[in-house]
Image 1: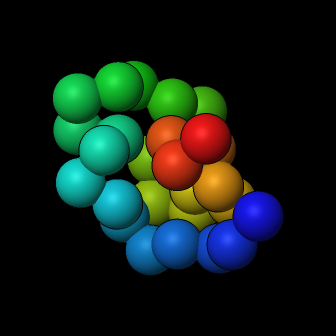
Image 2: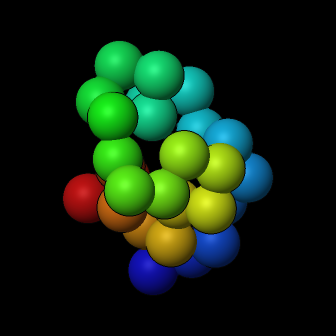
Length: 27
């Protein structure tokens, strides 16, 4: 669980955290 700043993954997979992915799109 790491706090990332706007990961390129959220562009393909719409997540509740667009620019504060706390390991969301990384899982």
